[in-house]
Length: 441
Ligand SMILES: Cc1ncc(COP(=O)(O)O)c(C=O)c1O
Image (tube, rainbow, N blue to C red; front, side):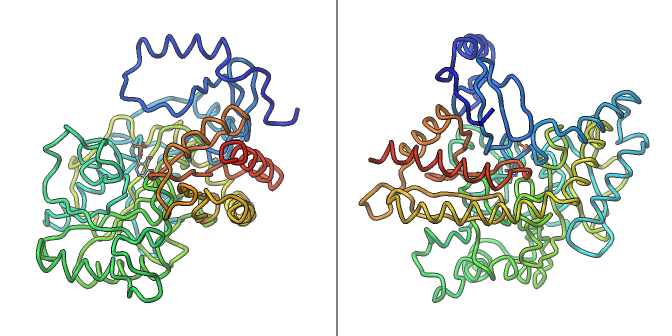
């Protein structure tokens, strides 16, 4: 059957009933995007409780890298589940964990030896990096960026600065964190133009932050997303990450790359840092690593992994079933899905860029691989963001059977599973274009 296939306007009666029950019991903190009630997922397709078929361009928020329930991943999970479900990798040894840590240390950027700490989520990988950075450098201060998203637990939340609502009323957060502007050329925080700006956003770290606020010898680490995710799918200028990496080296500061969203093939290379040839001291990963099973990792240079026995640990981190899913996922990525992300991603971005000529509401199309952002702005305005239009587009696309997500103030993200075909990308563009036509006519 051709997908999308909408039998009944979503949410249908079964979805409505489930959502009502959900609302009675689940924490109101969840920020549900639109009323999608999932019954099943297969590859690129999500079926809801009322039998509607949706084309998934969210991948469960950039997670299901190999598509929904890929048979090879499911087989690996079943085989491991039959053997044993848990035995606490912090305290004992098992095969899927050792296979995975070895694999991760080999495939992450940097030819130096590395040590891997496994977690259950992205935020825990960031917490581990935060603790290791302070422990190993004996420095307290950390630099992070406006627009960044690193997680919601108290340490990672202290680094997160994409929306103040994430942080409101949770203070005091952890001290000695400094936030600076990110290289967001489309809306340059310094109102400069790329080409003549001399990358002021990086230069100001030494000129302003280190001069007036914190001495560089007190800074343990700079935490950075190579492409900002939640902050708006922002790709920094070409020389940006290399300049930050050089600055870190000059001052003995650790560079921590948060590849939780950009990692595992999403940008058309296994890790986004590879686009710029940088080798961070620490890399944090999660999301796409295990096709949907909860797993994260912090991969650090061996010579900075100085923490001693019992300094950090986790009961569930590195769960054997999740490790087995990760090994199957990485195998599929290496055998073709990263390449597919690069190829179909280029096609999709080109097609979305063509829509920019047709729809004045599209202000920018950017991204790498299958991490593509379409920023909207109010028509006829001087590029004033249009979050209300963005939200209407997400809702209407959902009703038409295309699952999309927002990010940043006014951006729509296209982050499908990496199995997406050119035809499916074309279908998504058609549904997106017809949605824009309806809403902006
Ligand atoms: C770049 C980045 N870092 C960290 C996180 C937090 O990951 P988790 O939700 O698994 O804790 C996210 C989640 O969206 C993310 O996109």
